[in-house]
Image (cartoon, rainbow, N blue to C red; front, side, top):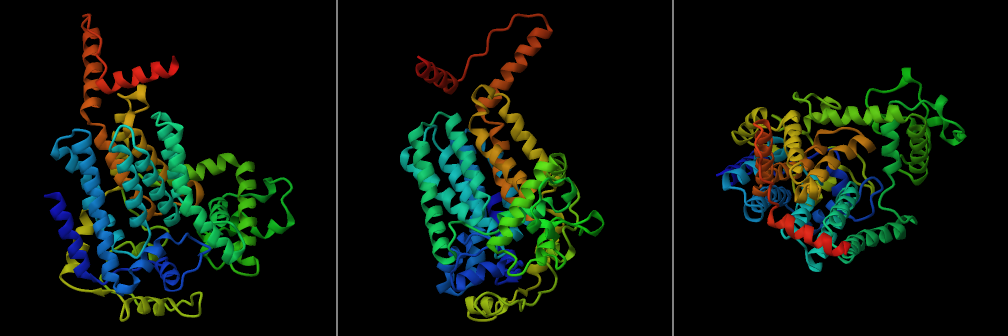
Length: 482
């Protein structure tokens, strides 16, 4: 029933907003797809997907594929919980509901953006890794390759690799499987970096990590507290009275200190200067850095969804009443953003708002969405599920829960809060919350409850027998020790 409703909602969105919706970043991805080159701001993984679909000249196909990815993520959560971990059908369906029914997830899938593809790839890797107690080398290679593709879709894929390798280490998967995963992941990443070097003479994925980190420290960096600050970085200093409202203003605003330098904003020189300046600011003001990170991380869990960072950006996360014209920004290669969109579609690419379907999508989005406090509740349920299996570091739940938390923390630590950065963590958090109710965890928690009640009554209680999986892992650990 839930999957049918989710499919119907996505059909309504496709009928109401034809052929697709656009975000500011959409046109950078399109520009690369029209004439591929290594983009200095973000990796080109999503642009490669657009390039593969380009011969069909259909943004509707792009939107449809992304909606199928959203449905597939819900199916993965359901299948893992139902078939692999023994939850009842209604429990598995309830865990899949956040990703299937959340209105902002639905709208994100309808945008020309990398987030849905990235989340889908991460969920594929997690599903493969959790489907069996011990993955084969073929599964390990597939997981590594998928994570490599996710890394080339969004830079935050690199922490996902680290999380997976740590999980495999804790689960005693063996160094061979870990090596296979690592090598398979690095193959596409190193290939991309080689292409980047051939085009720009630098072995890298982007030229933006230092600039985004500069934006993170922009709100608190005090040059008077930095020792031996190079003269070349003085232009990056800003007095508190002159600072702009948001951290991202340190990049995108016309009054950004980065504009005090000549040349392009995302140049290797600016990236190096911004990276060094940011590291000096963090070293000199670690408590201030921790404060801004904590502030943006906790913003995720606010009940009320406020307009942030500005009305123009926020409105692009909404199903709107009116269609906005395609921008006439000048893009690399000599054309404009509107020309790229029309060239990809081979016709009019401007979003058409079609009633009554668009009105139905707007009405749904006004009511049925996952509030930040709900995301926090889902994470807390997943965390509680780690406790009964503490002897095994939380068991399989450890992987989706830590990845979800990491995906929420990474933007706060390296850039700034944004609503679109919350949604990729939701499927993982929902999976971890569902695992909290797996029979093994419930049996362990019930045993603890009986023991506590027995102690309260002064009765002797029999010891709780370990589950078969715990017994098997204890025997394996004993053999390794011996």
